[in-house]
Length: 137
Image (cartoon, rainbow, N blue to C red; front, side, top):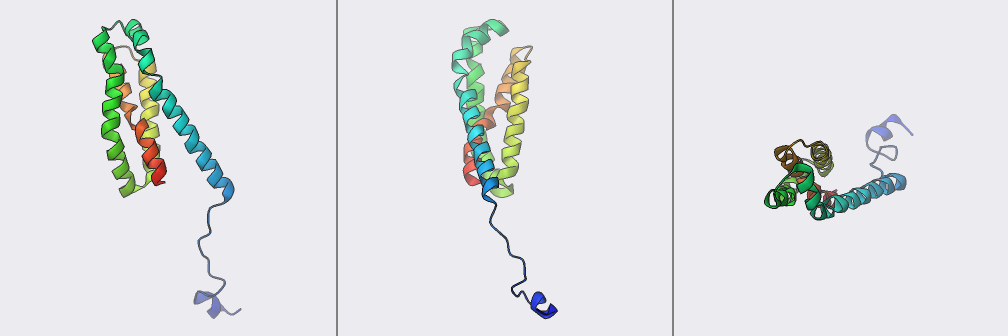
């Protein structure tokens, strides 16, 4: 083949190849793991309210904010993260959502008072945005 054949996009030009099956399987497996953990973190909160009351010395009304704040944050973050994922990339916002959830989880675990506890739960709101971002991916 001549150099001209290569320059004009002949058979030796490079084309994008589909992703390797092993990589796709690994990514899908990781996304399934994210959803399982997401369900666990969201579903385990309501039964924990009595323990949060005792741990933080809260009234029942204050302890109800433990779940309410996360639900409010989820209601805001799902459409926001979905749109931002459409504009700037789903993979990037999956990472942002997971970073928020990680920081929120640490804050909840180490919360010295109600304010820090609620801030941590609010940062866990993007957990609900993972599924739409994963579907977009």
